[in-house]
Image 1 (cartoon, helix red, strand yellow):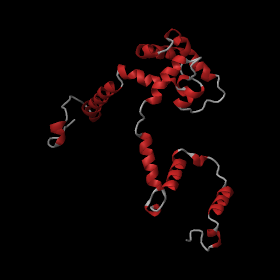
Image 2 (cartoon, helix red, strand yellow; image 1 turned 45 degrees about the horizontal axis):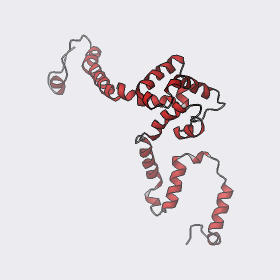
Image 3 (cartoon, one colour; image 1 turned 45 degrees about the vertical axis):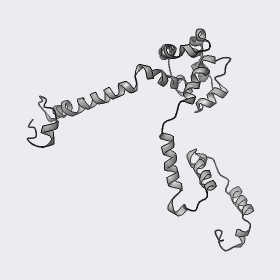
Image 4 (cartoon, helix red, strand yellow; image 1 turned 180 degrees about the vertical axis):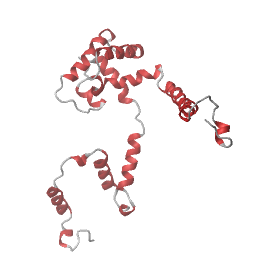
Length: 211
């Protein structure tokens, strides 16, 4: 393959032996790029941070899909990192194996939050160790994804044509849009009736939006 004689590539690209263009770009670009990605991922998912990540495996959607070997591996990771905070470490293994069985017996597995799991399922009698571990992801700071989505939602709602919208109405519309309340069937007649009771004088005017 004939390499470029002048320009950026001759100064920046590594000179590697090759027979085809595909082989050259594989050795000069693809493999170094994958090496950089791999080196960046190692500190992000190090052994110290893995236990925090494995705590997310205790949620029903994840733990119910794990087999016995996967639960055993999870047990070893959690015991190594969090055994010192468990109230009953001697029975942690039996509780962890009973936890997925508990969710597999549920008729309908809902997409519940960690707070709802702590309130309804992970009690201090049957699952004291699981409850203690779930408290950790319950208080961990969230990422910026939900905040960015809320900003995008407000940008769609509070446009230039709606610049005079009151704070109360903007807050109500934002809650409806962010939390998917629009999926619930709305009763149009009840909404119109409530509007007429709230603004009876407007119903006698030519326009509902008249002053």
